[in-house]
Image (cartoon, rainbow, N blue to C red):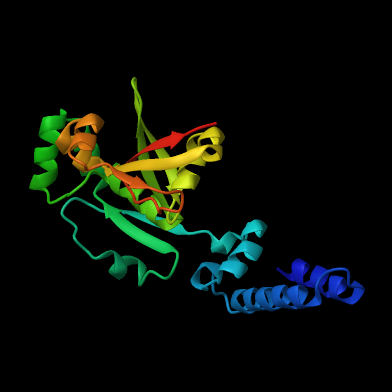
Length: 223
């Protein structure tokens, strides 16, 4: 941050770039510097869209989110906040009963669910860690269905159907016509895409549609 401020000061003296843009960037990095001098991680700050674009390319360590996983003894129900204190922005904590879950994970699938329920564990630890990681990173999953596979794709939250198409293949984005969308659980209930289409459950969305977590998307395109 200090090196960037030094370079911006030199750039401001020399000119060559819009002075107002340089001043805005200086103001951003001065705010970052103040936060760091107060020993406050940069993940606790809020950023406008413009600030996010400017700062994101610098790989600043304390802007990165943190997931803390606490390994608890069996039957220990101490709240996480009593162990770690209050979680700030960009920091999430969850607790696992590691030894117990390791033993349960070795059981057959049908017994695993029963034992998890008996110990009041709603989901296996691996699923909770993955979900917490996705939440912290602002990611979601959507699905595509082919003749030989169902595939999950990772996308940032708030991304559009056009961006989803580009994630699959650039040709799909280039020739995008429309997206056919249905939530995964609704599709499972109906049994097939053809049945969903027959019952009018397959929604038609345009390129600006914002994808939701767990949706199945079929991209119609022409190149």
